[in-house]
Image (tube, rainbow, N blue to C red):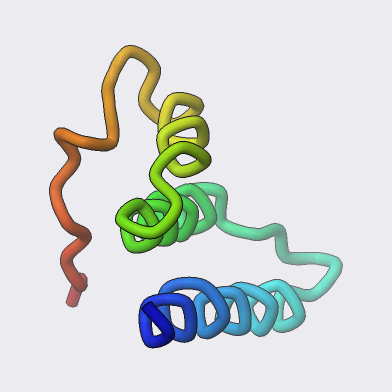
Length: 76
C-alpha cells in the first residue's frame, strides 16, 4: 500500500510538476502526454481508491469501465 502511494501518486506527481516547470511560456504542454499521465496514474491507483479512479476514467473513456482496462505498459 505504501509503495503504491509512493510511486503511483507522489513520484508521478513530481514528474508531472517537473514537466510543467520545464515547459516555457512559448511551449504548451503536450495534451496527449498529460492525458496518458492521467490514465496511467488512475490505473495504478485503482486498486486502492477504485471509486474516484472509475469516476475519472469515465471522463477519458465514456461508456467504459476501469475494471476492464489493461495495466499500463512502459513505452520505448
